[in-house]
Image 1: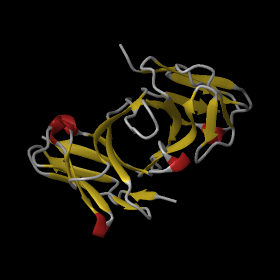
Image 2: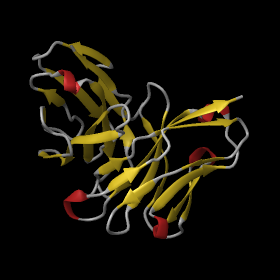
Image 3: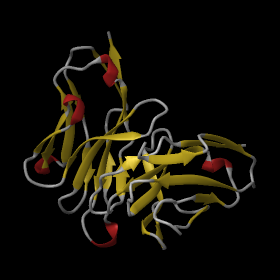
Image 4: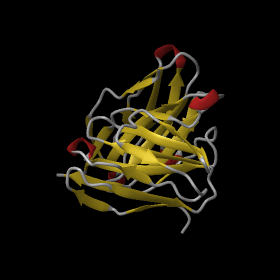
Length: 113
Length: 116
């Protein structure tokens, strides 16, 4: 089925470990973004990409890296996990930035101990 | 910078009752406005959006929202709530122009509980 696929669904990391959250979409969407969701704070933008090879920072980028080598994939890397990065992470894609017609993935629940 | 406030953290209604979820935004120009719904363990689904034109917007699942510029509000309404509407609802604002396109600022969310 067409949509946004996130893997893994759940992950537990130890402080200092690194990992990559995967996001893939098969809708040929140009715009992709990563949000984190924390209780009482809604969703906050981490990084976004307006097309392959182009990425930029959002509201809370510290501790995260992204790259966009293909239109389909937009992985999020945690360089050295910290307990403050315990959160639910959502990837979203849209045909274009101006379109705002986001499709969200089902999320990755990350716990850092 | 834009911001969104959802004053109600948790609302409880009886099935069949009407519903209004409040959303206030802060932005210097006409914003793009959205309501999303999130069921437990799921991603967000777009209910409706306002870009311009008619200030009363119809969405999916029988929801509607009204943009009131004078009150900086975009409240979500439904005339008769169903038990399946129990979820968390998020209001969001997007801006038009330049490199800011595509970025959404979300409110804190309102959890809706529906009693039978």
